[in-house]
Length: 143
Image (tube, rainbow, N blue to C red; front, side, top):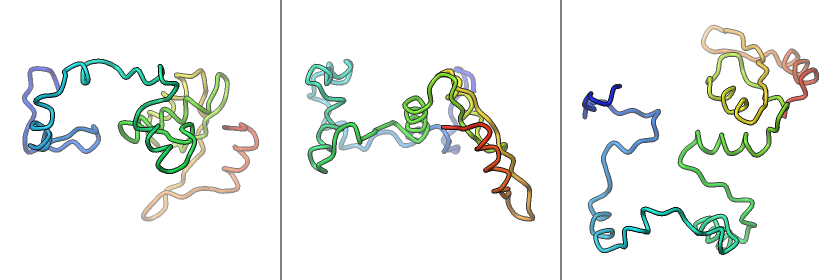
């Protein structure tokens, strides 16, 4: 969609991690008197030796190390963070042949490579060849 096209109110894009309805009315009441810098500047949580205020609070409330908490703005962001954390330059990510192109893209971002394993069409769905998958796993040694 180009910049000049209007968004259709009749279309809801479920794949874009967007809010189609805008903020709840109560949000406007809460933010009207807030200092704009709270919304305009990045957190300085690192100065307190923490990842972020929310992850710090969750770590305390649930008695976890803050390192055990991962937060993101959606499934795509969480997937990217996990791959960036565990896949290193030259490592292999094993992905199904018929899958989202993004898996390969995020592997490449860290210098990783991807290896596909086949899926086979059945009457109503695709199926794995488990023995074949294990052979590919042994050969490729994916992360």
